[in-house]
Image 1 (tube, rainbow, N blue to C red):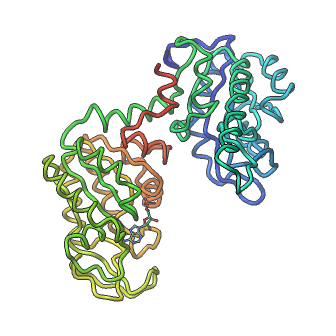
Image 2: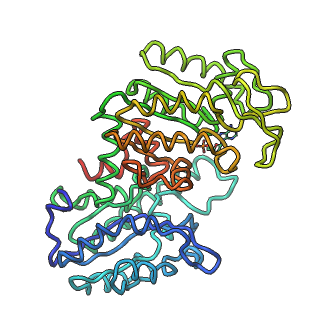
Length: 418
Ligand code: AMP
């Protein structure tokens, strides 16, 4: 079932959203991107004459805690949705049952933080640090048992289930995946945000227009290895950049000074170079670096070849020659995936490479390429440079997007599709 096909008139929909938004010390929402991202889905249901029961988590509570209460964002949500959203102080209590049952067409109810219950994640809480494996297994069994009741009760509030929480789609939690089995395929569906995310991932994994270029940046090869491996059988060009560069440079015998490097991943870097060759992938690495004599925005800087970095200096961004090479490859591409900066973009003096990459992606997009930006820091990059509107899609899911690109089946997606 798709959200556009479903008529929500007189129906109650349980909508799992990701309202895990940052709050300041007075509990004001400091970035409401995630709330806005779910609005089309919530508004569509209300406009159809349905009612919504909104479920979300906020933070990582270990149990009920005022600090993580969703009541803090109720007013903000009401303003954005244009309706007075009701609130149930406990997602399992009698109040939640009564208020969801009483919902009339066009009304909305926000449930308290689902993670106030260990059953949401299905992980035992409060285990002693020295708990034995048996104790851990027994505690897990208990929470898994009660998780069934928890999930069933959540499902009982509504006639249909809508998952619009891409940010948690990689978790097999009660409200993100397990709940789906209480609804038949005609009564469970993705929200609009999930639909967009799933479509975007599909364009870089399955329906690829070539040439396809992936730009993988960031600090560590070890955290990106599964993605790189999966992408090697998909892409035409793989740009590896950011702090990862220096593990490759060192592996090939270059001098990297004090640059960040994973000494135990040198063999892995060489293996990846070989694999890229074997698969006919054009692996593009930096040729020069903007170096600094300290890890600071105010450090002294110089430019040198990437494999000739003097001791006491470290590469904190790519330099001009590499910028040209990267931009050239990107501009000729028809599908582009960007994850991770080319350098320490948080320091203005070392953000130029990431800006150039972002601008090249925008230009390629103008010329008809599909571009997907996602996974934490590259989203911060496109926002910092004001380029978000110039790319095809900016993913809202950090870990979820990365796992999808690794080729993993995401439980939240599978639960709707099966
Ligand atoms: P990741 O979380 O692995 O995607 O890495 C992103 C982080 O890598 C950003 O905070 C960057 O500042 C950092 N980074 C990028 N290039 C370098 C570099 N050359 N040296 C140290 N850190 C870097």
